[in-house]
Image 1: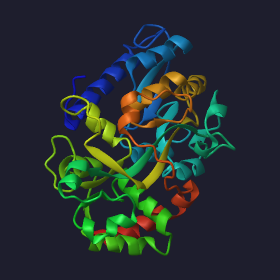
Image 2: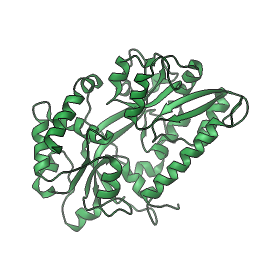
Image 3: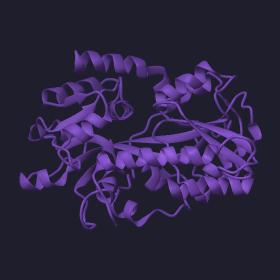
Amino acid sequence: MTRSSTRRLAAALALAMASVTLTACGSGGDSDGAGNQGGEQVTLVTHDSFNVSPEVLERFTEETGYRVQILRAGDAGVVVNQAVLSKNNPQGDVLFGIDNTLLSRALDEGVFAPYEAAGLAAIPETYQLDAGEHRVTPVDTGDICVNYDRAYFAEHELAPPQTLDDLIDPAYRDLLVVQNAATSSPGLGFLLGTVAAYGDDGWQEYWQALRDNGVEVVDGWEQAYNERFSGAAGGAGDRPLVVSYASSPPVEVIYGEGELPEEGPTGVSTGTCFRQIEFAGLLSGAGNPEGGQALLDFLIGQDFQEDLPLQMFVNPVHPDAELPEEFVTYGETIEEPLTMEPQRIAEHWESWVAAWTSLVIR
């Protein structure tokens, strides 16, 4: 396999996304398939990180007759805010990319129309956070976790941290970089994980201990991982611990240099992980609700679910979806992630972020 650095991966994904958009949208007029004259269009509103293989979208068009137009509208928070502001007059038919940290607000605002996707019964109930009303459909999961640079810890003959408690041990002073919870999705997820772990009475004390132990805070994932983390391919950072994802190690391997190693250059501190579940929903007032329903069915079908791991480096929710060998070999399965009810997040996240900002940033 020919591979490159993580930065080259970002460029490759950008090119792939441009290709997918052109293929899916075609050249106007009627389309019988993606990019061909003839069928009806269904518009998917999503975040900038969305990616899918062109042949998978073409298969959807062949099966349903609908062409998919992909409208990327920023990060997940921006996408959800726009959906709330434009409810009942939406930008598209289906929204993909809302996760459990943002879910309750959108549900409370009536952004989505109920629809029980075909095949939903096969999806584990633990992912169906709106099972009673079916306003959203679970599509994938990802775990926000601390990643570590294996080479650093081997060189210093120091065991990598595995739990949140470990991170405040003086042995790991000045080693961790995290993202700003007010500006970053993984930063917010990591904060929520600490609240889930230590409760309302203990999370601020924990963050004070992290601050005393030299935690560094930067604005977003790109800066934290590619600039400050010592384990990033091609990076020059000096922090061997970073908040990222349980699926980040496969990226380092697949798009790294040389032959596939027995073990990836980065690892996951499995006791630090907060579970994200990503959903899609039929937008209220959609211009093509039938096409939107067909697309939701497709998103939890085998073709799309098996395309997810190496396109967006997330886990499919369908239990029968086959995972690529590299994803399994170099990734981590988090058996007991930290979780939190979406309603609790909706009620408290603003006050938590304000308190965190005052404690850690100011």
